[in-house]
Length: 409
Image 1: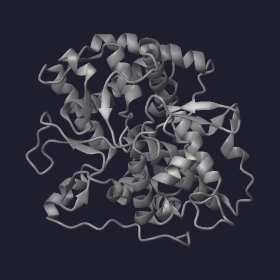
Image 2: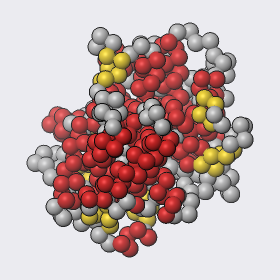
Image 3: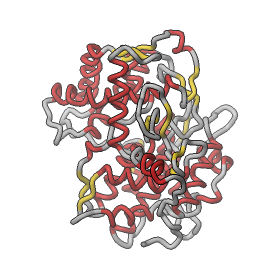
């Protein structure tokens, strides 16, 4: 194992062995997809209390998505949906500009993991008013602003334990809300939601792995003849990082992370009612594909991951009329992330992304092999969701307000 400040990365579980096995079955992209489609089936049968589904409206959503893809990428050369897209500002690729004589491709990959993992975990919704003013002169909000702010924090060595070696994230134990507030330019007039939750998440990350870059070595060891399936990236993340999510459900001593309860999902075992989502972990899995590829590891089965259950993708379906609230007054209320309305919305989003992806490909004239879900998201549903939100609501916020601690959306 490489890395000089790395703790044991193996999960430690307790509890009944059957419950433990049941819990582990929830820690996969397969489980996310399977139960999301079950939620959609319940909704299509008219048996989901909070939501109604109109699949005919998917045509309009697919039309908009294909239009957005063609406008942004006339050659259809769409990159993967990943955090690396947010490290570009004013036409400059900030990661590529880093002046660092990397020892070898593995050294660079570990630094890339450090950056991507910390940045993704800080990317859980900024609120409608927060802005980051970058040295380039750009003023950015939401995910783009969080991306550049987290990059600048990493670049400055604020996450490193060694001032002489700034481009590493082995000093997470000292990160607090005040450090994040300074790095993210938070003031009374520029509030950022969930500061305490984000800082606690980074500290727990440090407790779990020491240096996030060490996960590169874990994943490289899981490759077979230089090939690593994308779902395995997610499984490593879920097994290793489950304990960092405070206040979440657990089963058989296994922390379940971004997994919630909903009465529509029925099982005859201990996973009855559980709905795994794993949004941030999957966003992270997508974001680790490029560093692995750059280090010479071929990532396969990218469509084994699912779409992301966040408010841009979910908002696209609401704003296009695919999803409608049973009670229209719910649109004016704030809803807890563990409530049935939000859990259902997020699961339905995952299933509907699987439905819309082939429709978008058909409109673009591309194959699934050439245009995996990671490109559909980037090109794509996320951008289309943002566009339609901006046309319908001042500030472009989501159609549903979820009460978040900064670690979900």
